[in-house]
Length: 111
Length: 112
Image (cartoon, rainbow over all chains, first blue to last red; front, side, top):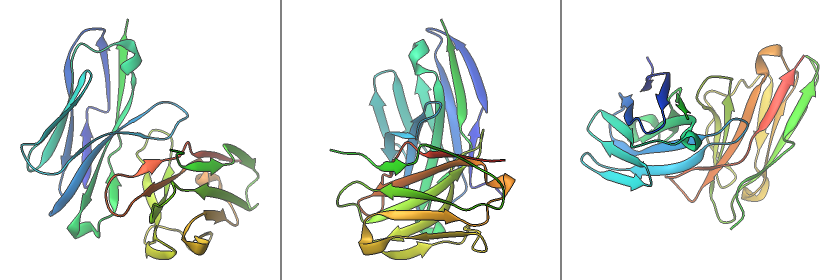
């Protein structure tokens, strides 16, 4: 069973068309949930950390939210340069504090 | 502040050959990770070090993969002998302790 599930697998949006990416997790004792951005041929770039339900973080056109079983990455009025793969990862007590990644959402913003 | 350094960036080898990857973490970071990322997938943890001790290597194929972190700083990951299915990007990351992991650019390995 996957412990971190991201949806959709891929998403194509027109420039300016807002949407949300989902990350659901089944671990217990969440220590932290992380969002990363990954461009082709590069390593993941850290975006946000969320620690408790109800927490929100914002950076430019991105906003991350957290509930007890899932997180959303909201993208408002995206631009073509926001095109990338967005990865979600969790760190939890019951997984020996390993950082476990989902498979990612490939986001493509059309000009 | 310098980031996580990895080398080489690319490597092409024939199956059954051996290969080694090098990682220099961010200065002062006690925790070091090696991940394997197959095309279209999320990173999969291979091994995690805390200083120079192994914290987790449950998903490391120990019959062919080995890793070490001498003096709690640099690390090397070795594959011997390589198989076709080892073709992937190998990512190194580091963190202060538990928490945010910062990644290097990765090494893209192609086994032919």
